[in-house]
Length: 178
Image (cartoon, rainbow, N blue to C red):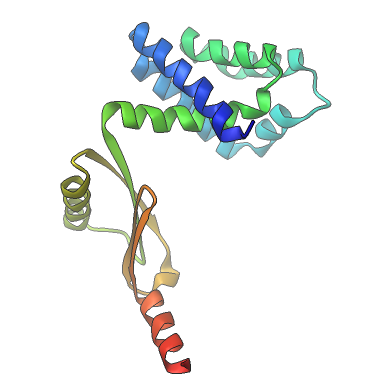
């Protein structure tokens, strides 16, 4: 089974349990923290994927790092996954939970990549554009990439609008080469 399918099943079950126990926001915060921990610590991800480290030792690592800080519902997924010897899926499960939470709350994530930091007005304009097209609340993720020279790249789900000067220059180079 692919990682995405497994992650989706566990994340959906965790979301359903969190909804039932009225702890969705706490579990969401915990899963965000876990995703950030995995992003910040490649060692943690490698430890979870390691076939050499015993499953009980992996649970001990997770317990030491997260048990006191996390909601018991959040931590229960770690216990379930380690009992089933699927610890390598934990980062993907947490990421998928974050995605399902956004869907559950009607939040659309949109990523804007620009050559410089966006002004408050620009952020507001991008948010309004995405909200108008999706009908959802918008969580704007801003990234700066100076190689764009100018303009922006807007990503919403699997759609992308590339209005960067870098793309325009590449298009011009291709048209001149033809």
